[in-house]
Image 1 (cartoon, one colour):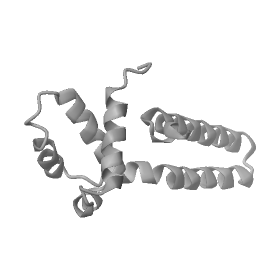
Image 2 (cartoon, helix red, strand yellow):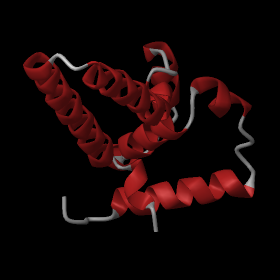
Image 3 (spheres, one colour):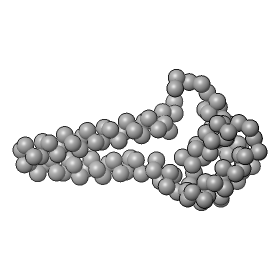
Image 4 (spheres, helix red, strand yellow):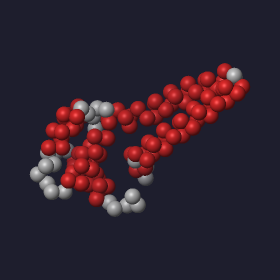
Length: 126
């Protein structure tokens, strides 16, 4: 039901909304010089960090060398587009430490891989 929350477009839309809210408050502050707009700016920035941090945490949790090691696991297959998509989904959902500690034989991980493959093979609207 809430699959859109994992979408990159949802993150981009949130960023645009936060930028619009901040720019509106900055404009209003310079016009009126009221202190309440500074409080709005600080609260909006704080909420943006709180809302967007989990999305960026997994992106910056991987070094390039660690990504290359994971990508090397897919070199034995011919479907590089599917493999790259699966790797991207893995980079989004797990940090490197979480991925290393993850039990690859667990039913939860197998369900994650099956859902990721289904999503990657889906020829949706885009």
